[in-house]
Image 1: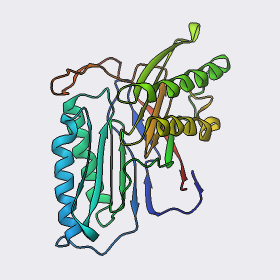
Image 2: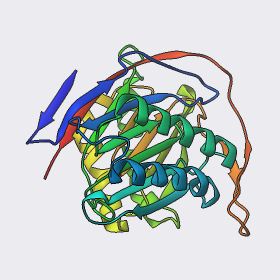
Image 3: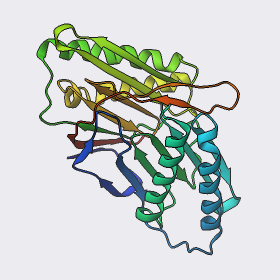
Length: 275
């Protein structure tokens, strides 16, 4: 199901309508956006700059705490790019996710100048228009249509995620995880992250906006994920994220994996806002 608000540059949109994820969190292609196909060729300055850009993102992203943005080229061939991995993901998994997202971009958006690709563990974006530091309200929600939560936990879960959204912008890397003890109904786990190019103020607005926009969609679900161009949120009834430590010397990550592999199927809803 798709919902649109206002005009959008997005012409070509692909969603995975049935997505299997595991309790031992796995890297899943959540969706991608492509602008209208262009006529640039492999010999054009844009294509050359794109290849150089993607090479830089692949090389530097995983080694810079999972985040890197850069600009390549001049004038009409100039291109802006960003890669950001989920902060709890290891350097190795970040590198793999970066390569996978680039492969999707080159395969499914091969002639597009504006591309966004979401995986569970990372987010890739590039464009011929400057977007660094600009809060983009485009978001999509993944929910399980049959996995309803107990009524007594629903309001607690929303309040809990509102607190996660409030705390994340205040953290050094605008990333936060937390646990809600729902008593006899078990625990709920939440996580929020903003792209590091936007301000803390916009990060807060972005996360709050997602909770308001998708409140009806996610409110009574035991598990959901919201992916956006500037921020993302996750909520599940199992510990889906990794426990990691981040050494100060080079930003490399070590991970400790928790969870038991049990697949569930997710449906996808998407809503785009364009100022």
